[in-house]
Image 1 (tube, rainbow, N blue to C red):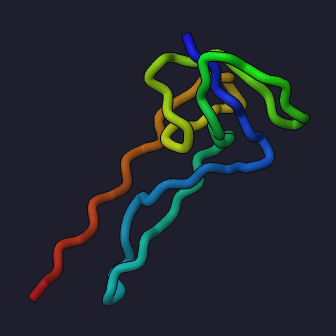
Image 2 (tube, helix red, strand yellow; image 1 turned 90 degrees about the vertical axis):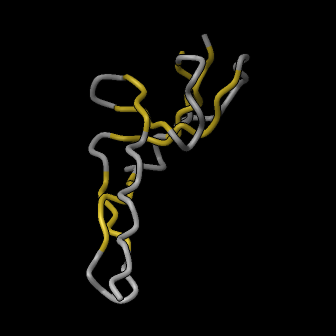
Amino acid sequence: MKNALIAPNQSPISYVSGWTTDNPPEPIYTPIANSCRVAEVSDQTFEVSPPLFWTECADDVVADQWYYNTSDKEIYPIPAPAPYPEQVV
């Protein structure tokens, strides 16, 4: 089991949920409710200043690819970005 360093002052996390119909398309960012950044993942913890804190996490968690949910205190992967739209010729 590893440890995730949570940065609650760096929230909410957002992801690319779609694209505009502009030319060129612009990303549409959607915030994830109750989310905080997973800033680092480590085998060992070290002292940090508040509001940062450590929580246990699974071995496959990767910083900035997962987020911490403040409601249920669980860590989830950030959704994959929506695919870039195909160019219409």
